[in-house]
Length: 187
Image (cartoon, rainbow, N blue to C red):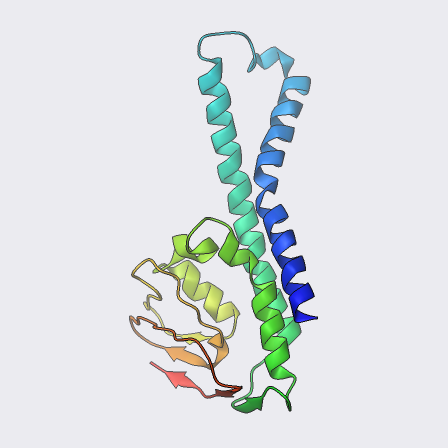
């Protein structure tokens, strides 16, 4: 079941992030049909520059909207699938938390596939926006803190168990254990 969900999310994620090219082409087509008096497509020597500029602006607008939607998707999926995390051990064969956690990671794939290396979180690392994002996921973060200020978006899988009050660099390691023991982290 988990494999099927991961494959489905990968396919949907690939389709989702390719929407910007289709949207730009559709908007340019509508401009060509409905704004003929503007002459965007008139055969002039600078037509290529105008079209390239329009495509670039449309890509920026559509990709920004997609990034915001994907961030809201991850926040919504976290609160629906996992809810508020509880401190304590969660064994894979006794608790549904581990399966829900895996499902949430699969549903969160959207923010890691767009915008190249680092995903959607890459451009907002070290800013107030990533702090707002993790606060929406349940993290307790003080004023003037910078998360992942080095430019690389690390993996914070249990943000509602993290409390941060100053500049922090997070390092991650793979979980090779057969259980997850959740405990609050104060930095």
